[in-house]
Image 1 (tube, helix red, strand yellow):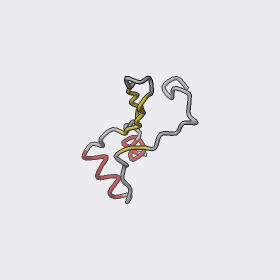
Image 2 (tube, one colour):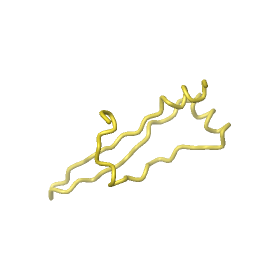
Image 3 (cartoon, helix red, strand yellow):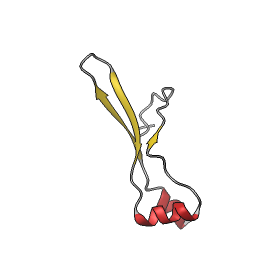
Image 4 (tube, one colour):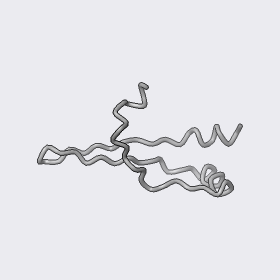
Length: 65
């Protein structure tokens, strides 16, 4: 259970940058894991990507969903 509590503190967020021509640049990023989280991920044989793919199907703000 401690592993879930530790990894539940990892977050992702969307960065939306408007351009001068009216378009938007969208990036989905994940927080940098702490040393303890990184150690656990290594033990599990897993890692976090530098950048998550942006899912255009998701149109709901996850903070309020």
